[in-house]
Image (cartoon, rainbow, N blue to C red; front, side, top):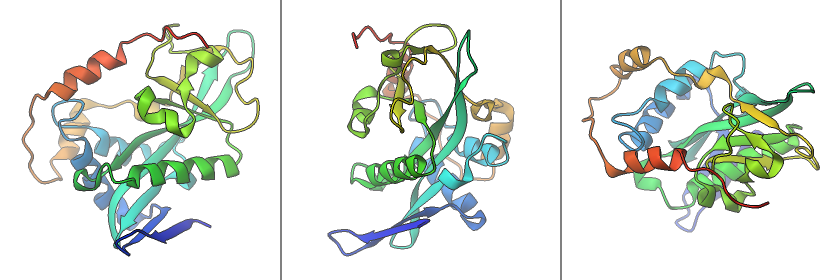
Length: 226
């Protein structure tokens, strides 16, 4: 089924469903609230959603919103990616980003429900593996590990702690060895993003410690032995 519904301890209805066109602005605004000033001054993730929907690598069947009491408070969006190899055809994979929950509903388990739902659907649809950039500790509970385990690097040939992999099918990443190529659907034109942001309520752009922490985390190399 395309809809998953349940009730929490407060008897509030929680629904995860495919995003519909009428959800677009609400989902974008929710995403904007979630990311504002977290990784950079302001944010661009809401523009990313807007622009990726019409890209050839966008996967609509894996684009979900989460409703809490009939109000959208989160979402997750997927694009196609691949693993490029020097002596063999590329290996197809998929990537989720962004994934978000409205700030006042964060750390209450909603994001976990959303991610698990999308992983289950991706596996059922026959996708082979998910590759993402994220915090290892945050995504380890879902089965993600350093992509270095499968000899998958970034295009520069280096293995970073933030590059994570999750096989969805048995042996999907066995003997792969290559580098990830994320879709150019996730590439942002800053000028276009600024213009798009004018459609939303005014927010103050600030410099916060989380932005430098994020920049540092992105540069950490994976020195683990797998």
